[in-house]
Length: 333
Image (cartoon, rainbow, N blue to C red; front, side, top):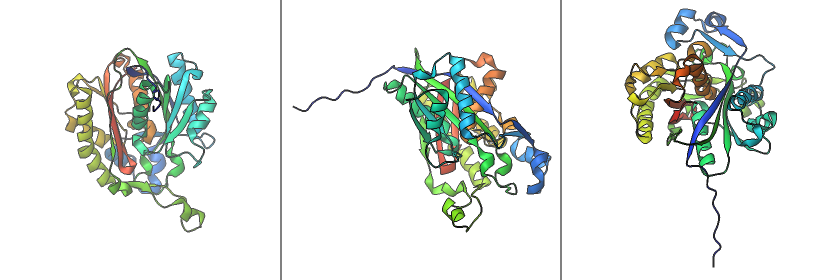
C-alpha cells in the first residue's frame, strides 16, 4: 500500500499586518542632475512629475536599507523576528550575485533560521512577493512572512542617460504578512511578456564589462514602449485583479500603482475609471522611481498622510523590466 503523504495546512485568510520604510538620506533635486542630460527642472517635472528623488550614501547598501525597513515593520506589529518563517526580498540591485540579499537581511533582523530568497522581477517584484507570502502563510509553511522591496538604483545609472537615470531613487519598503480573521489579500494576477525584454534592461552584460569590452552596465529603457504597455496592457491586468477580488473600483479606498512616472499613474487611473473618492499614491514626486521598493514606500507614505485609510481596500500593481507584472487587492494595515 502506498503511504499517504502529509500536507501542510494553515489559516484560511491572510493580510498585511504592518509596513516599514527606509528612504535614501540624500535629497537630489532636478537641478542637481539636469546638466549631464542637457535638461532642466521644468522638463523633468513635465515629463515625470518628479520634483526630488532620494538616494543613499555610498556606505549604505540594499542590505542596510532592507534591515531598517523590516525592523520598522516588526516594531509596528509588535512581533519578534523569531516568528518570521520566511523573508522574501525583491531587488535588482544586490551587489552580489550570490548569496541572496534575503539571507543577510534575515540574519540582520534576527530571523534565522527563516527561509530567505530573492525575487528578480524588477518593479513587479514586491507584488510577486506578496503573492508568494500569501501562499506560504495559507499553506502553513510560515506563520509570518516579511516581503521587502529594496533598491539602490543609483549604483546602476549613467548620469548622462536621458532614458531612465533621472527617474531613479534609492529606498526600501517592507510588509509583514500573517494570518487574519477575514480576507486581506485577494487572488493575484501575475504574468510577463518576455518578447519585450529589452524595453527596460541593462546597457550590456557583466561579462562584457569583465572582459574590458564595455563600461559598467547601467539601466536603459524605451520610454514610449513602456508608457504604452503600462497604460494599456496594465489597465487590463488591474481590471482583472478587481474582478478576481470580487469588487469594483468604487469599493477601493486607495490605488497604489508602481511609481514609474506621474503621467503613467494619471493615465492609468483614467483608464481604470478610478473615482475621485479613491486616494491615489503619488510618492514618486518626492522619492522618484525606486523599482521593487516603490509600492511599499508609497503605501507607507499614504498611511502616514491618510491614517483614515487603514482597513480600507487598495489595488496595487507592479510592472516593469521583463516585462513582468503583478497585481492584487489588499486590505491596508
